[in-house]
Picture 1: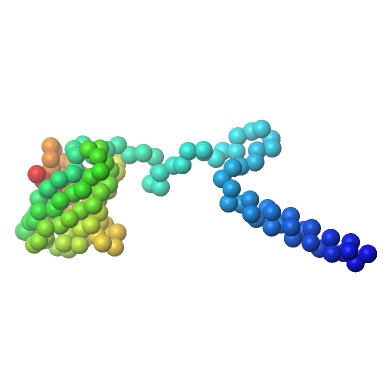
Picture 2 (picture 1 turned 60 degrees about the vertical axis):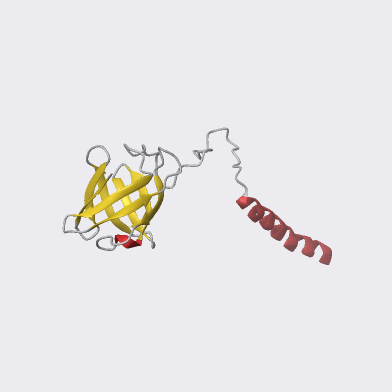
Length: 145
């Protein structure tokens, strides 16, 4: 009889461990034949795909503040239709744009971010090779080539 008690206490542990081990499996069991509602293709973190910027952002730009001051910034882009990349600011950038490190483009516009991923400015297309917008503190800025 002690052997039976051992089996009854270890069986739930073995079954539980097996179930936990399968939690990391990406396959989903579907016993009813109906769709599980889980998409097989991963969705981007920011939601649906966004359209690329109206112009290739890669290359050298001039960042100007309406209150005065300007500097050169170089945008990195892995492809002509890239929606994100790195920023290398030049010297003398107005406000805190010397901390610019990353850009992203979405339906909201062009967002420039600092080394802590905080938004520095949001700019919208304003003609060929020109973007206009405001810093996070409300200062007007333009980006042009």
